[in-house]
Image 1 (cartoon, chains in turn orange, green):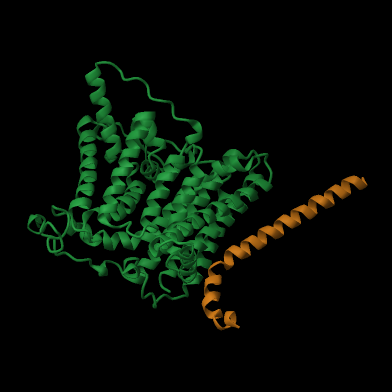
Image 2 (cartoon, chains in turn orange, green):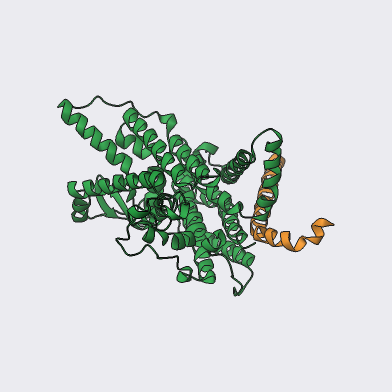
Length: 48
Length: 464
């Protein structure tokens, strides 16, 4: 309740760090995609 | 007073919310990153040519100029100590605190970035060390015994410790800006430098162990002015940083440089002003006096800010390591540490720009012997007004709040783009595969975006 009442204050602070959070999210996605691709390559190589 | 000094009040006429500047800065960084990846396929900075200027070098390195600069440095140190002990004990009415915390600590950063390593010429401890060395050599009529060799593992650790202690004096010690405290600190620091120089040699210690020398020399590497084989010359700005060889303790030193400014900004933020009294109360329950409890609280805050900066950088390094290339985290942390120097400059410039502009004006009045305004100087009758400036007050109209904000955002963005460029150039040097180099920089880009957002958030906090 307290958090919601003061959301206007802390949301502005969070807004500063949205680009960082967005960027780290993107990096995480790139990392996961890279690992999936490597796993798929290994599976294909094993199948051959 | 602090808010006015930092010039961050009354930015009501900004066209967009302050946080949106952070988003715009992040976009600038991402665009710069893409441009670097496409247009900068091979290392350029470390290969940048050096244009020697032998005529200028002869003048700058001549015996009279050398002697004059050294004497001026020693004179200013002596005035700082004298006015700290003998002058008014009101901080703003005494030469010592304003000279040390504003002109020396902040002004020299700007001068170093513009004109290279000027502090080396004026360094009072180096001047004293060289003078003593010359006297000893002359008296003995023989070369002096070689000092101890500087231990590799000591690296920049003494410099990091020196800068940390200075930051703690400024930000955590309750009477850190008291003239007498400043004078005592100057004497203690001087003794430490003389011991270091006696053990390891004047130049060796100055280049590695003297915190202020290392601090200003790092900023000087941003400058186009550099010295090669004793000759002054010009290079592309940042090129000297691309050649920088880090030592043990260089990464912690940079973390201290950025972390101390971070804490200074965060100390004004509601997040800290809300939590600090609780921490202080806890220490008081352990038996500490309110003053000591508050000092310990601020010291913990300072250490935490440095740890956050160090941790965030190391997170980026670990990320870059995960890309491949066979490097250890230690290798990469040292390889990219030079890119933190423009960030440290951006933090100092953005955070203290208006403080330098406003409080720097105090020096006009404080320069009259005995280095404090007559009216409030306990020496009273001994006071002078030889420059006719003793009644001069600070002109806060020298820059408006909105203009100051744009300058600060400019410093932050330019500093981080410079850091990104350096890191990209270094990656191309150390990675054999260009694609791998660019991928490693995804993580450094994350670090830069993080430091940019943090810098702008800190600047906004003084307006809460």
